[in-house]
Amino acid sequence: LKSKLVGIPSINEVLQKNGYQEDFAQIFTEWTITLIVNDCQINLKYCYLNNSLDNLKINPTLIFLPISGDSSLSVTNVTKNWSGNWQKIIGGSGDLKLKFSSLLGLDFKVPYIIFDKSNNYTINFLNLDKNQEGEINIEDFGSKYNSLIIIPSLQTKISKFNGFESTYPYTFIVSITGAVQDSDQALIQSLLDQIDSLKKQIAAILASNGTSRNDDISCTALNNNLYFGISNSSAVTCLQQFLKTQGQDIYPEGLVTGVFGNLTKSAVIRFQEKYYVQILIPLGLTKGTGFVGSSTRLRINQLNSCKINEECF
Image (cartoon, rainbow, N blue to C red):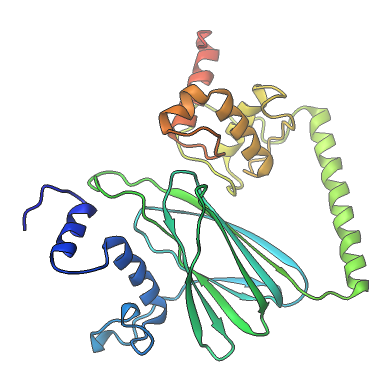
């Protein structure tokens, strides 16, 4: 076979010439679903026709929710293009909401499967907006429905697969609202108030000291991508130390914890938008993402270097 095209477009050309309606992306997505259901009686698209593969299925990563009460869990993973990811959510009792998000400019496909108490299932696809965000809502989870499996895959890259493959983050937040007794709700609120008070006290102490226990870490250059959800990381500590030097307009909280949380993400976004010419425009972006990728790291390393050489630009 010969084609002027390369990569995935060349595969799509062959598929079309041979009368197939699906393209490579559709076939790949159907394969990721097949590894969960593998059921020819429901749909031939989601099963292996070879009888030797009748029992071939994958065990997804399990995520357990508390059996009762309200709960919320945030999960951040990284993935390469055309890699399968399977996460199964079980537990909980009430109305479940799942929010999926990734970076602007990427192309994620997110099929999901809902299983009821009798192990019957339905297959759906999460519609993501232009910001790569989408939401799933399931009522009576835990009583009517037994589990939810999401299967996100990144399908942005279509050629030049002969080199290093970068990873990209995606995040999903699972929350469930269950029926809670009034007395339990009062206790929960009291505990939440105490936690909030302690957080403010810790922030005040750190702010008054103007430092944290991680400030003694020696930082040179950022060499790896950083993103929301990373914890106990010396690289995140270095990032926070740098952001702190950028002043109140960039990182007013000034916390150096080694945890890439919402405050750090907001500071990164402000930094990216301050240096949008160097960071955002080369990527075709107009707003900061909070993801510390190659262009953001380059600018940070330049500023760190120029402080030493006194030649900032």
